[in-house]
Amino acid sequence: MPLYEFYCEKCKKEVSMTLTIGERERGEYKCPGCGSKKLQPLMGTFFSKTSRKS
Image (cartoon, rainbow, N blue to C red; front, top):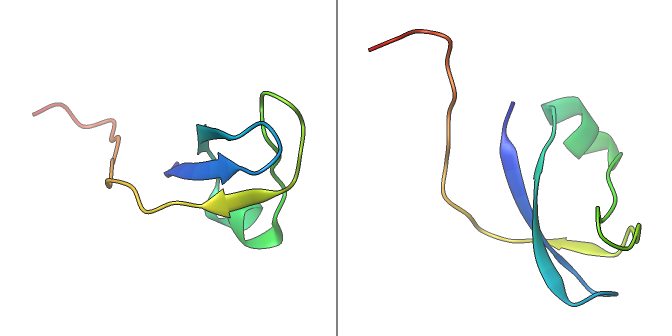
């Protein structure tokens, strides 16, 4: 699942959350610290986790 980064306007912190693409599109997320839905998406690095060993 993708890792998304947001800035919470209520608690003034950057938060990272692992969400499915569907959860992200539907807006089914809130700040894990204060519970606010006032989150602004941030540009972050891309991280991919696979089950395949290299």
